Length: 322
Ligand code: MRU
Image (cartoon, rainbow, N blue to C red; front, side):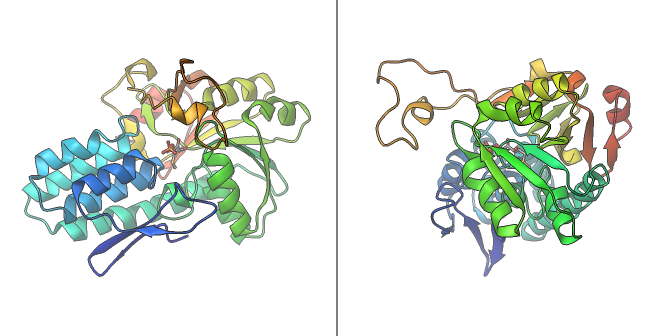
């Protein structure tokens, strides 16, 4: 996919806000450019924003402590952002080559995604129907993805999956990004509105749900794209395995449970105006636009990381990752 590319001392980012209509690369230079790109989802997905921020820490010539704080404030929920900037700050204090460190974060992400994809694929059978929400594919990472990783790896190995992707209101990552990515990879994909997930489950079309995560608490509660909790509740009702796929850098051991996760709230225009020819509601109508929700760990069948498949009890088993 080549969504994040470092060449000639420049980071090239495939502008995800323009997909799937236009494939345009942006080249952020200043700290404001990076902040804007992260805040406005030109680069998005937990691992991908971590990688972009790591290059920002290496390439922007500013006070690194201040730069870290500024970049972290662009999006508060995904822990990978502050995880990457923290690692870059430590590398700076240790006098390491920051470009090499950012490249290492990228390379490790490729390796992590590959392992997550292998573990994830071991849980799936050829011909399975899969439901996914948001975009946890290559666009959200370096390569393969997390939630979509087993599907892309499976395609390479000759598996045929039938994927249903929720459109993922209000920013349509499922419609704009997941369907684009899977079409490009030659994987059978069907787009549905978020409200149709129960119908495809009830009709027996779904064997497993695969999603990414933005932050995982010590007890296994996970923050995911808004709407994921609804999918998890439905999957449990219909006895369909609900898998969360994420690198261990998404586990935040400093928090006990989901209530401690800061949920980003975004502008009401995203609900009422974006993607509509005319606004869908009156200007004065209030909106509530949380970008993520928390899935209770009891609803999760397994958390799939690069270090293996973590099952319940999550608290004890996540602890072993330390
Ligand atoms: O708001 P976004 O598009 O950055 O949200 C992304 C997601 O919720 C992803 O599913 C998550 O970051 C996992 S990425 C592998």
